[in-house]
Image (tube, rainbow, N blue to C red; front, side, top):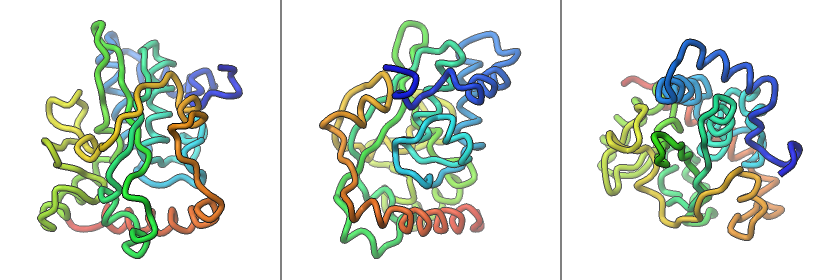
Length: 231
């Protein structure tokens, strides 16, 4: 892919500079990865970017917020800029995981599943999955309390379906954030742009494109309300 067509633009000056700052003095891949993880999780707040999905990593940094797909793009780019092999794994997720985040009136008009991604990194010769960077820690802790109070295993951008949940840096041993809600596997891709150009990716139709900015603004308002709520 040419530098113009890939989204995980690891060679962009902003990405290269941030990766160098975050990994300065880190001697191992795990130390570097932990630092990159914390930046993507907490400095890039969970939220919906003005543009959907096809956003470059350098642009995600500019927005200062992202969701699963845009955060995965940024995390992959930072890993590659730091010499850590990384790829993006795509699939479909149960849209109910966004209850409490998306406005309730929207659900009758939404499909039952939505596009989703997480990253995989090569550590010690093995590809390991990570998704616990998706929700910033402040949001996760407040959302977790709301989800437990609801009695549901899925919602507020968290899933307990099929296992534990965690926002800590781990490869699933302590739990994932979204993995329990994944319902279909679309495989691993070298760059998100390749997946978005494939026939597996469901693009917005004209109506969805028009209403996305409104839905994103309402969802971001709900996210702020959850994040600011009492623990």
